[in-house]
Image 1 (cartoon, rainbow over the protein chains, first blue to last red):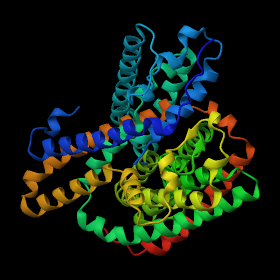
Image 2: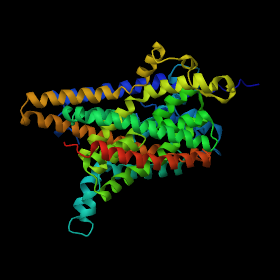
Image 3: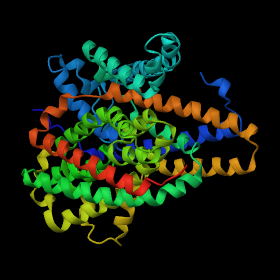
Length: 46
Length: 430
């Protein structure tokens, strides 16, 4: 007899989702900083 | 969206749709085996077949290639269509089509092709609307002078509080009149009044809703948001609304942050600025509403006591013990639900404004241009993902009463939102 399947709850994902929130924020700020210090110039962007 | 857990609920809605879509497939081809499981990533008890991880990575990589390829095609169309239409009867129309229109249409086309091939549900991990929209909004902050943000913030807060209260109260009442379950009422009212799926996820945690209720609420949000992307800018233009009022109306009405950004971009640069400020303000209030809902259900409805654990609960049990606003758990929940990208949006706006005061325009302009170009890429990827993620299949589970509540409350939201935007933003100057 197979074990009952574990019920999935949206809060299972919370840690992952919060991490995505922070990750997007940090990546956005890193890109912004790179543009402001001149590491990324308009010519580099297709 | 945002503090969005929209991806999460999308996952639920999408899996519900995927199971219908691939009902006739053999078990080895099941999306539940091939699609990534966020629960597994969160460290719960994954059951994996040998090779399934490599397969998932392969499908996700294919999804990334398709998403980026479609975004590339959007950029090409933005240049190519007006050039090709020059001198023809379509010249004016071709020049007026903004990039979100191409992005969403190509996303839907890609969705149709991948669904027909039976492989879309395996690639959903690559369709990260929320991730791209948050990166794009942080960069959008760089293009908004902080003085505009400060001036728009007051009316935005007033609009958000009044609109959330009015739409929440109406939806709660109307859904009650139709006899909907209290937990579903909370989900529908939160998603309609605050910020779409992220609000529904927060409310689901607060009231311990069933996962099915969250899945079809998430689907309803997207089904209603997509037409609004085109409808609201068109109506605003038809009514001759000023840019700030258009932005405030779009930001206050469309439920998901991604769709607000798309509609704002269709309407123009200044409407987009106000729409994004209004929307991030609404997003920031999400945590407070989640705490109030938790307290309400703890005192009044107490759904946990009557809930069948076998149904699947969409909430964290410890939250149901919050009984006063000063409770540290309440403050923790406000912070947990606070969308962190708002901090990046404000930080970028402040830094860009300071640089605007201290650097010469010749030196600063290329740097801001670069940030804006990447912002456009991020938003294009998000808009393409809206089309690719879309899944109507799970909406059929919602039932006609929930759809009716959503439709009627959306009209109320539009009317009240337009009135508030006219009163609060009619004299706003950029």
